[in-house]
Image 1: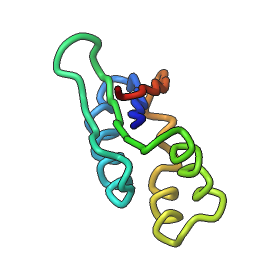
Image 2 (image 1 turned 90 degrees about the vertical axis):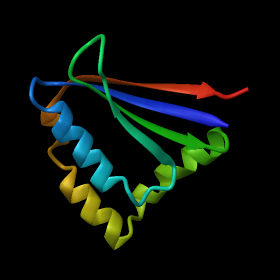
Image 3 (image 1 turned 180 degrees about the vertical axis):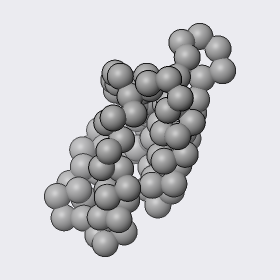
Length: 97
């Protein structure tokens, strides 16, 4: 199993907004298992956690965006300005043993 953490350090006042946006727009994605905000440590951090059977499944999940369904297009429209909500971001991919 592969677990992916997409981490975003939001501009002040945007972490909760971004978490709610992810929760709403990713609700139809069976791979997204959690949207988390920090309670200690670095502030304004949002982490979206997803899991996949393997790296091939992870790569295939991106193929759907090249031919999006009407539902995906609706979510993509809601997400179009999310880049303005954060300062930096990164992705970590873990193999579960």
